[in-house]
View 1 (cartoon, rainbow, N blue to C red):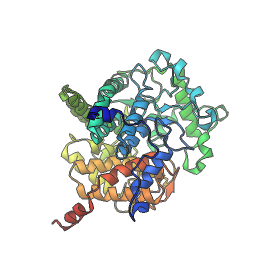
View 2: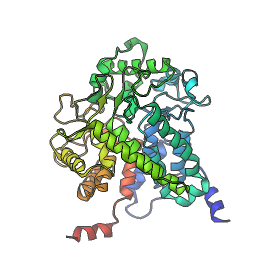
View 3: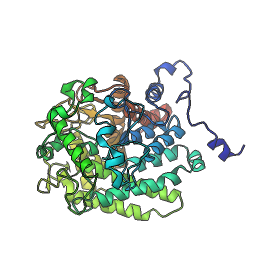
View 4: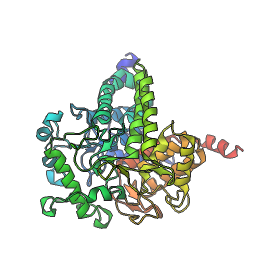
Length: 476
């Protein structure tokens, strides 16, 4: 059997997702424990974030999960992304939830019968064979696809993985760049807090205050069945989330561009969302080159978007990027959030901005390496700070993973190493918690959380080997 036949003949599913442990240290392996979490949350075609709290497939979760899965099953990592992209709408949008039809409707809200994607989204090209939500999440998918390809290029080429995903990823970016440029300046806007991924951030308080909430009796919050109410969004905030989503649905999921108001009364340019789009533009350039096409136009676009991001969202006095509220007078939101640090990922950032972001990360507002063990999701000194409430202060593993990459890319190896070790220690110690108290590292939310396990697995595999670590320790 030739190499191509061997690769394509690999089974799509495995009884276990990791090599059987051997030796006296096997039971103490973070690799094995993380792989067990991903195995437990695997459905056969994708991975749920959490069996109880999040029983469907989430968009940016699956991208992060694929990044970790590549270390234990490159084929399954490819399948993860392929399953998600199979639910793409004809207009290019990648929905933030792909629903599992075998899960009862009351297991999660908003459920498929709320979104009505196949009917309300018909004009936008929603798929008819699968039910999805109608909003999106941060576009980290091209970056994930490139990393998954690099884990086993032979398998990827044999299966045509990048060749099949490239047009879908290009359409996804095209949708964002053309349909979601609501400010007309080139940056992408989110039309719902859930789209940005940091659902309950204080950055949304002022934009949300203009929204009339849906009546409490009109929906039932399934999330409170699995999490402490004091750690979750308030009923008032949730009512506003529901109102925004229902209005967008009832408008046929139409978007406005160039400053139009078709997308509703919530439109925010977010630094993390745009930074991840830029990072994925660079990844799409690499993917195009792997497929024999030119990637220069993508890189040039990424550099232009970086300049626009800096021009529109950088706050030199605060030392970080801020959100811009397009419906609130086109002004910068005064809150300091981890979202404003994520652009550290970008290679074309001016050096003075990189230096300022590093200072802010270690300064009193985020205090990484001092009072905070991981990067808080919100300003430690902010009035709205809460170490346990969803995205209003707790530290999340995916944002720390992104910042570890940013620090390393800009030559901050020592700080990156310290952050990597903190992520690994806390992920393992908390049973791969959804998020943690930034001061104590205590687990919050769900445990056995897929992206925590996946990203810990990725950092674990990117550590220097023990001999390499010893040599680094001895170096001047």
